[in-house]
Length: 141
Image (cartoon, rainbow, N blue to C red; front, side):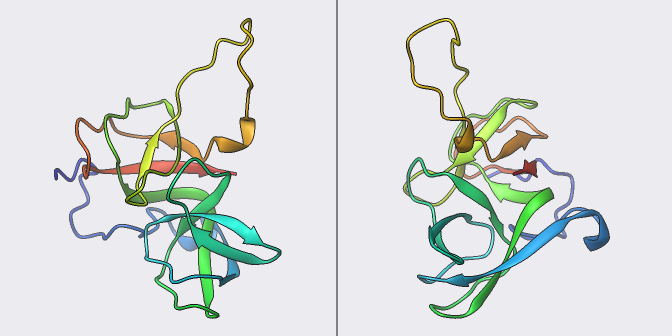
């Protein structure tokens, strides 16, 4: 695991900018949530950690027990764990089976593939070369 952010003093799930420049919203945890995990709306007003392709709304900035409120970064820069190779400047989504951010493949819009714009969680600010690399992303939900 390499920390590619240049910010070794920050943990996974830490916001990389002043809180006034980020948008953090509180949701009830429908299941236990780990700080730094991508989360999705699993019920009205409730979030769960993503463990597959899900329409994630952001990154948990604190761990939360079931029923507790969980702050979620829905816009801004945050430190995350990569689930594999991610190219700087490319779109990312959540998540793999280990609740890590992964690359969102480019889609040929002229083809017949179904396009799901809601899968895009944000954009990678560094290139991850392996699973568990620490990178920053700009969440833009």
